[in-house]
Length: 193
Image 1 (cartoon, rainbow, N blue to C red):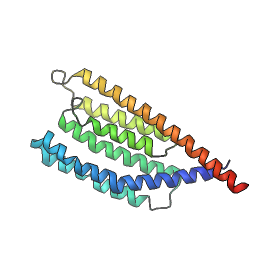
Image 2: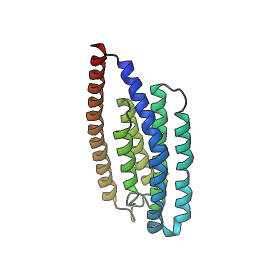
Image 3: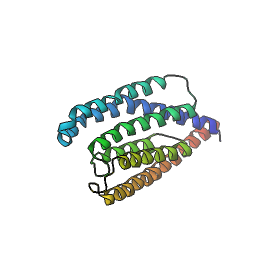
Image 4: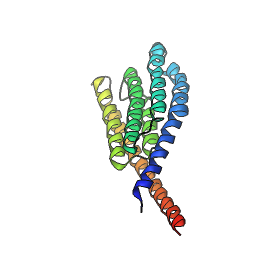
């Protein structure tokens, strides 16, 4: 089997998925979630708008950089940086909202699902992506952790949900990867016949 051809196909799929997410999903969801910001943090709404604004240049940069003729590995790096930047924006909101007990935690779940499930990373990039997002989340939450005000159980429970999200997303991703590989092999066999 020609693994280079399969990786080339995966590279194009990664490019298409990141471009779609950066053009439509991230900007729209971040704008829609301004409603939640207004309801949850009315006193800090201007800060929320400012923080959310930073996803727009990140989306634009990811979209434009992927126009360049990049290798699969370099596209994965761009996608990893794009995912991490989305997570940073959400983590800034989590920090603003108080850390582990923040309901902005759901945004990190969305980042993990979309990046692990829909981005055809190689395994090493998939694991690195999950590790970076999980580590970032805990560092941010611990930076504002207050023993008296924070519920440690919320942090522990939240991490179980994040690890569960990562596990389910990995299972979905690898099931889909196997399907893509089998489909590619079938197409290759048909062209050789």
